[in-house]
Image (cartoon, rainbow over all chains, first blue to last red; front, side):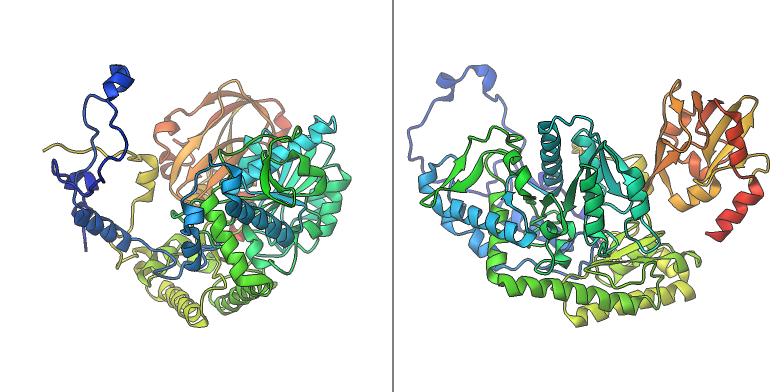
Length: 489
Length: 127
């Protein structure tokens, strides 16, 4: 097994004056820094950067990448994260010079193609979600949530309604929902789930009131279950004067079949790096467009990208806008990838995505429920949640099962989330996996369950085949070492 | 696991030890076992008011963050500062060293709504 010490950081490979680059000859006049800046602004010592050859860099980062696990190297059923395959055509298109060699400060007339792509993406996302208009500005999902909530706040305030201080979130919600509500200045209030894992309507009626700003919900919910009473819930919230916020993390299950706008949602954020195949999981960056209903459209972040029929332009004259939420206009490169995905799949392809995502999840759930406790037994959508309760009685916890999966070459599913399921294990296979891969994973899970019965210690001490064995997570959390210090020889 | 007989217990797995007109509060052995290794304990400040069933702090373990719900109402008169540097006490000694707060009761009758050791034992056996 390789020790950590065998992998130096790149600074330790450095040799003075070794170069891994060559610069072209200067084709502009040389400027003497001393004549342009006072000495306070000029660095007196060289920056401490690693000096290595190109080959050293290649070997160093290739070695590191081999220790990583990505969807291109193996199955990655991380529930709630939609770790699907990112088609490589996305990368080709994002590198077209017309997209990759432009600058945000260029005159609009010189980047009409790029603006046209963004406008078409806005329109496509409006159509897919059933919303009136979409902004591409937010950099990722959490910023999208915050942007959406700020628009809801602006809406209430524009109505002279300053008492709506509460945002309702289900107890199964993504952690970002209550966090975004808090950052946007609201108080997060929890609504309970019922015994079927859906929002408890009676409890919703109990917590809703004239202080309700919004209900934040993802549908299907974090248990992978479709909220059947969504229209009734929308009515409860709207009747109380609140607005309905859709967390788009789980759109992969319903895309092409159901639209948040038709369910009564007023604001929707999407994670283009999930459903629409932007790279993510360390690869990023994300992109978190937000769609709104007609009554909220005037609050969209400005500038708003629009068209007069002849050309595309940014409209800055938006007096009710909540303002700009990101410099320039969104994570453009990711938006190009999402647009490429939408256009290469087409409407029928996107419907097929939802179908296969749901079929794959149900197939796995039904086979795994024979070995693992399934707390909610109705059909799931794109993901499902098992409980490690049975295995826990044998002394094997969900964390141990997750660690053991590493030995089979899988990234473990999401564990201990959602919080309302004991010893939770949340699996999202996505539509891009073959039946063979699903079967192999199911077999590994069944084998681990058998090991828990016959030889629990084997599971408790896993993993065995990875570069690093069981980490001391407790110590890492209690006494974190967050900085690297070079030890001088 | 044996539960201190003289303590009272809440549905949210807190224990309450009566000391005159004050109570000492912590989380149970069962709660720490469910949470796993505790890495951080967030407590209120002395002088803060506690409202029955409302969150007053949180306990963070390797796998989750769990809120502490007030088993009684009252005023915080003491907090266990040792837990800041030694959260592992919650795992090692949940009923003794890892007491979290001492509260001056505002309504003694709330104690009657808590469970005794036998009732609490039955509740966790059923889980």
